[in-house]
Length: 96
Image (cartoon, one colour):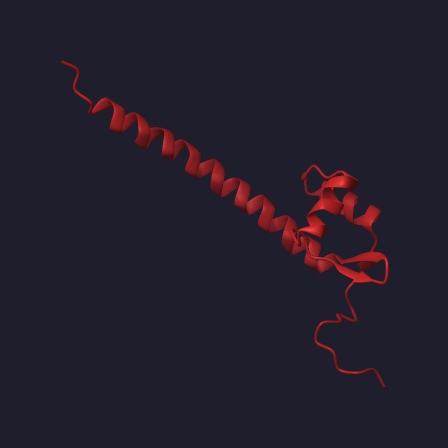
């Protein structure tokens, strides 16, 4: 019998670094191996380490990719609003 560990996802697909890079790129997120390693070193991407090997769970990567895409869309919406507010402030300045 297996020990009950909530951190281990028995039915989730485990993938390697190279496969994780390809998986993230399928979502349209540019990812080199060096960037992937940088993100793992700063805990910027969900991963596990078993000895010297990095492993990724497919479901964790999928959630991370969706968050990245969502954040990008939200920030692209905020930028025009910031520009409009800035222009509105500048238009209220009176020149003598």
